[in-house]
Image 1: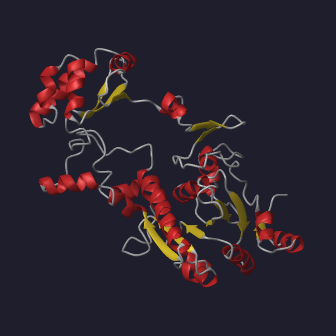
Image 2 (image 1 turned 135 degrees about the vertical axis):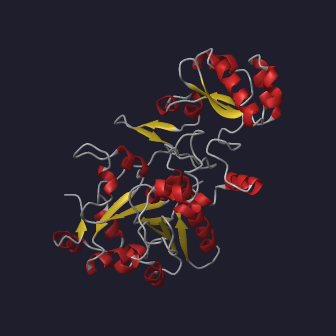
Image 3 (image 1 turned 45 degrees about the vertical axis):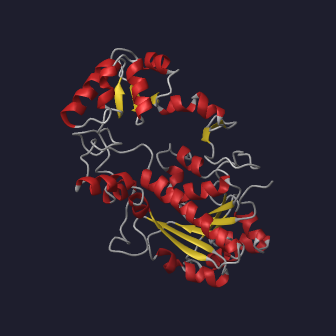
Length: 392
């Protein structure tokens, strides 16, 4: 069997994190993903938080398995070269603010005229319309507007940031990839191409289901750290151990909570599984006192046999060596010693193999434009004029 997206070509105009992560999903599933970069700085994630002259590990992580073409879309000759690539593409992904691609002559109407079956995805912070459509933003801003940041953090404390960019990745990248795949199914069945508009703020709000539930139940948002899944009840919370590590207690089901309380000698807490107010505070304080009597390693060993949804809170270095993730093949080491995270998808008949390392800017310009019909003499002339960029 071939890869699920074998034969699908994606032209990715996006930069930084959300768009490249979206196209990484597609590349890992077998698509030929072509990064379309300008001839100057290219994707500025290359240098993000990296030592001078080096490529950032973040850029390498989300751009493996892709090819890069570098051309100047503002030059008519560069635009023509891009259009030659469009005629061979199935998907175009862009992450600019609304209006930018139209100014460059590479918006959906312009490209669909040349490639009617094209699936074109615009991934932006606030969408293609609405009062904030033209505003700049990052993950923290989208979370703030969607009411998610306000609800995240410990009781009585300020809003807390997640180490995983929820709006950028789980909202923007994953939502865009899902919509692209749905549109590709439509075109494969004879449908026409489509324009997809994904806003990261929208995608964040769309997943705030528990928050909306609390709002409808109580008539007001749950205070930070006091909802069912944010630490508001004793059976679903984080507790410190003697060595100032933490246990994640997720014993929502009665059988799990009862098993935990019995195992640690606190059967008196069974009836207060979902207690709130003073009774809940007392239960949490009692449970915290119990967990503070032993280290994380001791609790992990003591509860290892118990099926009750209580687990250690690992740091990332520990997660990379965790037996479960290792067994699932989630961590790879390249020959140069760099760490790489595998695709989260397991599809029968398609084994994940880490793709080629992330490309240098314009590394595949000559190859790709040759495929589109350009000869070497024409390419050399374009490179000399600064319209395209190719390796020396």
